[in-house]
Length: 289
Image 1: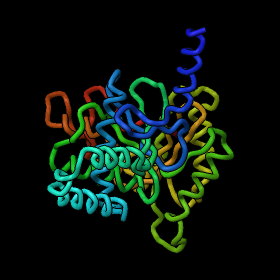
Image 2: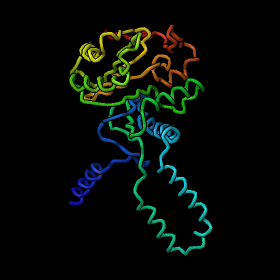
Image 3: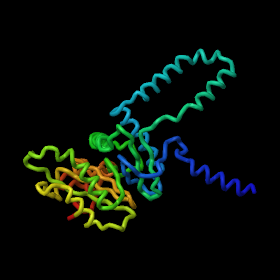
Image 4: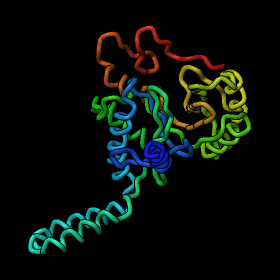
């Protein structure tokens, strides 16, 4: 029946759909280096769109590729041949347009991961993009200029890796990401640290259990400091996915909340002793141990 054929084709189209309507890619699973983002409710798609544009600008500057260089050269060549193209007959112009349509889709360094969760989106980063460097670059710019370049984005949390939310996998990932910071075993004094944990749509493991287990990944000579730590272990959990990133200057960068940074000069906001922007009534430091 016609109706049955329509339903089948719709399902087939949905299963094949890997790109948004504007041509940007969609990644079905959260995996690998990525940026976990909170945004205004109902503006998730708009936040993804503005972050694609913003991240691509930074990536082109920080990690230029041969592809981007050749793309610019191709555009310049096409512009220089414009007068010649005008002299071609219609058939040749149509053939050229058809050839352009058959070109492979441009390789992108970012993909939106499906979350179907209000106020929350995830942007996957493809090598060589480093999400920590990427977010730090943007937040530094916002701190310096007061301009966020985004309208719906709130907090940006970079994670260097992801795993299944179980204790063994999380400890293995945390240990691996801490290795570069533990390379100098003779360093004195040892740095202090804090585990910053955020959980969404997850009730299998408790906060105290996760924090206590991840703390065992840090050698005992490195002490916890809840007020002004030197190193932050950022732990993001969404359903059965865990993302971890190890960063410095997290409080100085206002917990990467660009919207709060932009609002910091408005009434009702103040800076606490650590230089962090704090909304009225919000606890400056969340206890986690």
